[in-house]
Length: 523
Image (cartoon, rainbow, N blue to C red):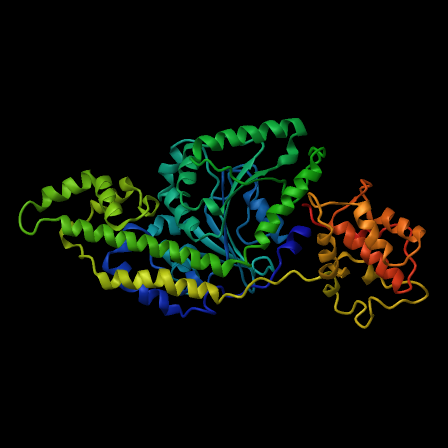
């Protein structure tokens, strides 16, 4: 299957190759996060398994939008725990991972397994862990990523009450660790329920990871698809408070294509689907840099958190009126944030949501908070300014784009591109990259081109100096002036000189200019 093949790739541990496992804990996770109880207000500390985890793809959507079918399509097979149907079928969070054999690990066991990146889920308790499981199956796709399937979202408040755990907080936990978040819609389910709206709001701060998938796009015709797309963007616009337009993929992933599907947009849908699969394929390439990016985000948040806690401690009285002062600080927490922001010259975007922070803050006695320790903050500043940038500079760069002559190491390896046999030059000679532009461009610029062009009258003396006959030069001009405007730009001039070189080598010119001699640049 093309989708499967296009996403196969070997996986490499992202960060561990260049950064010792204990360095993050020694600088940020240990002293700073523990001293100021970062875990009590935000998320659990990062573990080695979190840092070494494969790229994670999170699927969120309402029921029957094709989340499970999409996973089946990628893997090209069933996996343990899969259940596909038009009714709400996935009733739990499911982590699909690579394994030597098909196996299902219940949530409680997965959350205490040090080799899995799910230990932070213990925070959500038994009610959630009983609705979470890890599904392992051998798959080349899963060698490069972990896929998180979520329960289908229904409308109304009843489901939120009966879940027994905070669905949006669990989504937020996974979103913070995910490398790609796919919001799934289909052409018949464009409404955004209350719980779906809260789930989307929980993704705030992760916008660069979010992609929207309009699945089952072939179940409507072309005109209807245009209206469906517009309606979906209108619905999203009311929920996602951002001026940027989210990337939307029109796709259709089926295990078996239904007979009543429309074919008038098939080319568009297949092109969009390939773009989505390409996004998935690219995940592993930048996995290490994304891990460092998440560590930087967490370090910045931990630093601001330490300043908030230290500031609140400093504002508390030494002896009397502590309870009243704490209530006042809670009531005007947003104003305290502004004071901290101005004092330390911090961007507003680094601060947590005041209302949510206030809910956690009310559970603690501010008088028992720790004061600001400058040495801890200096260590974090050093990590952000020096250590982490140095780490990123040590990452290997991507593979460079090869020249055409380098694509096949066995292709005419011993052939001289300028060797003439029976009046013919090898195909390699007739390639745009083979032209000696460094020799020809100074001559072109000496003709003082206007708007990048020189006239035939200006070029004629240069061509006449070659000593070729008038008929040959006329033929060279005809092939080089492919836009037939009587002028040469730099590309056309270099092509003409290259054709002259071919004649000087003793070759016979082709009847028309080979397409490989045409420049590929657009501007």
